[in-house]
Amino acid sequence: SAVISQKPSRDICQRGTSLTIQCQVDSQVTMMFWYRQQPGQSLTLIATANQGSEATYESGFVIDKFPISRPNLTFSTLTVSNMSPEDSSIYLCSVAGAALKTQYFGPGTRLLVL
Amino acid sequence: SQQGEEDPQALSIQEGENATMNCSYKTSINNLQWYRQNSGRGLVHLILIRSNEREKHSGRLRVTLDTSKKSSSLLITASRAADTASYFCATVPISYNTDKLIFGTGTRLQVFP
Image (cartoon, rainbow over all chains, first blue to last red; front, side, top):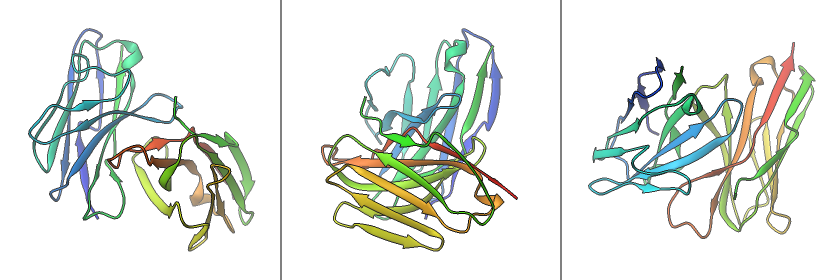
């Protein structure tokens, strides 16, 4: 299994500002992912965080808006840039890999943009 | 969108009753998984069923998979108030060469004591 922590757990931000969310896992993992869950909705994959290279973004998500870092096999950050109220969501990171039987999710970061 | 559909969107039952949730998906898959989410928190993995399996059990959970119909169902037997949560199916499409998941729309389950 894997234990994942996210910081911050929640935040209230002003439009136009940026927020960086951290994801830490207690063991080295191959794959790390970032998801967005808008209010009352399901989860949508933003990107795959690749260690040592640029993240792979899904359709509708771009690096300028959601820059991602992954400096090592246990840590990743997601930045939500130039925020607007439409960015109010829960952002979740998850991990997967051959050593893990399934995908594990962090507790999420609840973001409210005013 | 490749997102799967779940029905019902919401389900309210009494403790002790069974709850059945259905999931339909759009592409051929490697496996299908069910997750639970309590009050907008992180997701908890419940069960994984591979594309060559038809049924799987785990405690009070029973999952079926029909790849010909691209559908799955999750049955929770003898429900408890603590089962109140949102339930999501998620698939790993064959066309993907990674573990990234495509989530269904979810079912909100309310179990009344």
